[in-house]
Length: 140
Image (cartoon, rainbow, N blue to C red; front, side, top):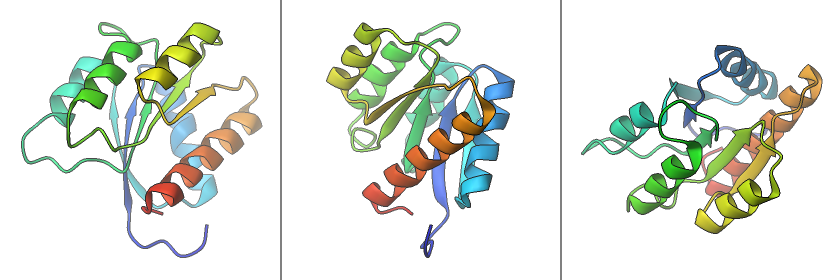
């Protein structure tokens, strides 16, 4: 990944513990130096991210199929918070729905990744996407 200037701050909104572990492994395998903060619901993530004085993360990874508020609503709220509006949000979901892809892009998602079913593909795709997003935002 080249020279890392700082430890990136990444927020993962994911209710499946197995997927949280896979994301951690993907980041580790790619050598991405980061602080990963995980929330299992959109409500918890929004409550934390919208706190006054909290620094905006460098990247948000967001599942669409969450308990309570669904990922599309969470994305909409993230994009409406001025200090979070520039944070790239990567949708990381099992949904293959073209309407989900189009809707999240319209709202402001930087990227849409369908969770690959093969472990190697998951690790490679997620690691590469995070690395590209961090480099693009100047955080990697």
